[in-house]
Amino acid sequence: MIKLQSISKSYTTPNGTFQAVAPTSLHVEPGDVYGIIGFSGAGKSTLLRLVNLLERPDEGKVYVDGQELTGLSNRELRKARQSIGMIFQHFNLLNNRTVADNVAFPLEIAGLPKEERKKRVQECLEIVGLAEKVDSYPAKLSGGQKQRVAIARALASRPKVLLCDEPTSALDPQTTRTILSFLKEINQKLGVTILIVTHEMSVVKEICNKVAVMERGHLVEKLSLSEREVKPKTEIAQLLFEEETGKERGIANV
Ligand SMILES: Nc1ncnc2c1ncn2[C@@H]1O[C@H](COP(=O)(O)OP(=O)(O)OP(=O)(O)O)[C@@H](O)[C@H]1O
Figure (cartoon, rainbow, N blue to C red):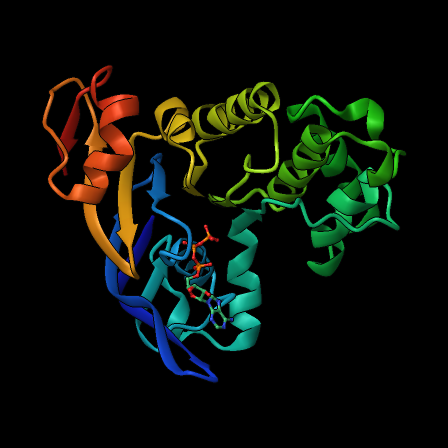
């Protein structure tokens, strides 16, 4: 569903060129909930933003649902992005728009007729259990409710893929569980493939079936969470995994 082929990204800074993502390949299969973990500054968010070309890779190819995004014109890319939803740590809602108008926003851009938009907004708010908040403004909502609106907005275009950038990092543990249960449901009931960046092992443990570990711009290990007990190989993966998940759940190399 998502295929990254040797993509890399460098930034020019006053101190010279900095490689945020070294040439990286990754294959996310349909139905996966694939986690990317690593310490701060490892390049996780940059990697995620390379998937929908919010950042253009310096090299390499990006495929989503069989289509090479790196080969598309801007117009074609705008259309292709309709099948890729995204949610962020700080929700990124428009504060001067109601909940309904936030969810409708991508549909307006896509040119969907008003009646159809209204139906979709209702449908997506029902999925996240917020139908009664349709006329509220974001300022009146809790953090968890804001993230649920952001999820509804991401679902409005009926995406096949959902990119999640630290979606629960600004939330308390109870709210985190609620958001993760919605993501799980979206994956299982709607068949949406999820790629999720997080530094929280509990998130991986709760919803991911696969995980890749990132360190200093490199994907140093890819693991499948399964019954068989196979230990992570790299030091960073052991550090990130062993204490929290390794003892409770087998980890097999992919
Ligand atoms: N637009 C940019 N210009 C310059 N450097 C950047 C830019 N975006 C990211 N970086 C640098 O690239 C590196 C990777 O950043 P990135 O945000 O992808 O890491 P991360 O693993 O998501 O970390 P965090 O969990 O702290 O967000 C960091 O050192 C960051 O400072």
